[in-house]
Amino acid sequence: MSKLGRYSADRKKVETLSASKTITVADCGTLFILSADQVTASLPNASDAGKGWWAKFIMTADIADGVLIAATAGDGDNIHGVGLCSSGSGADPSPAFPDGTNAQATHEAGGVDVITFHSASSAGDQVELVCDGSNWFATAIAYDVNAISFD
Image (cartoon, rainbow, N blue to C red):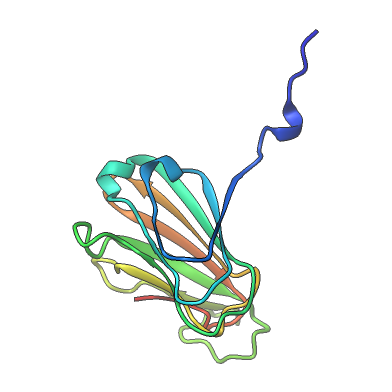
């Protein structure tokens, strides 16, 4: 009887970004570890990436300066999403949910072209992106309300 190999069935592709990188279509399904200041991760064109393309970006250390996830110039403002942060972060969120938890969202009808990790980012803050072939949909999770912005 052959082995099923289930021990690695959900193993992630992991790549550390310590310098700027143009993300490719072949990078679909990669967990990018962000470990340096002033890094830009440039996404592929949404039409090239296609439906179901996804990647996740996780901060592994506190940073002093911005880390960017950027759409291509050809895509423009096609990143849509929401960011959630800890209700115990101590920052006064705007806007806040009625239950007191903190949130921020992309309010622009057309979306944005950059997601920024700011100096308030800390280890564990993260953004996951999924593509539908024409738009990027982002979910951001951070401890501090000022850690991640949709610009």
